[in-house]
Length: 237
Image 1 (cartoon, rainbow, N blue to C red):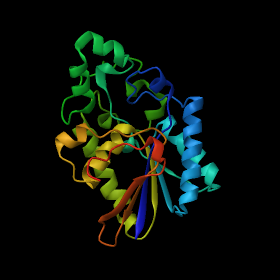
Image 2 (cartoon, rainbow, N blue to C red):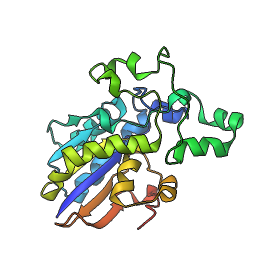
Image 3 (tube, helix red, strand yellow):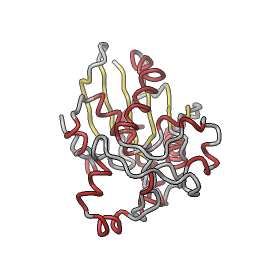
């Protein structure tokens, strides 16, 4: 048996400001750091020995993982992969979610945020929030950097990386991934076999470890959030 622990980064500065963040590389708030520290303590109490750590390229996920590792007193190197980045919100990037709901309607904003294949208009490449203008992504091939994404697009890159780099390790080893709301939602769609309507209702809380236990045939035999007070409905369990 093996374990996969999925952790959405702690609250970020733009989470607090209710902005569409996507690939903009913002850091954690003080509360986000506390969430990450609590996540570390909860994982420590679970007595799961983690063999491999993964994160996106983004600061908020990296720093969440570093705080978790510090709490666990585990100094293993972790792998950073742009494929685990948050969904790119295109022209919505940097805009306030509440103001956008007032402008185009809550239903339309929800559709762009949660639906399977809808995506905002592309972000202008001259915009400072475009990933090609952010130092963090200088090592990512430009042809791989999106201008906008749907959840479907995010799913394809996340799942491709998971299948190639992580899944085989879960046959015998335990893995922790520190990532983002939409990259974790994308992975959960595959792992839980959710349909396109179910995935629209799946919400991932910040800084709350989601533990999946697999049997030797890679079937999920247990799934739970470690912080029960902030657990979200997993749709199928």
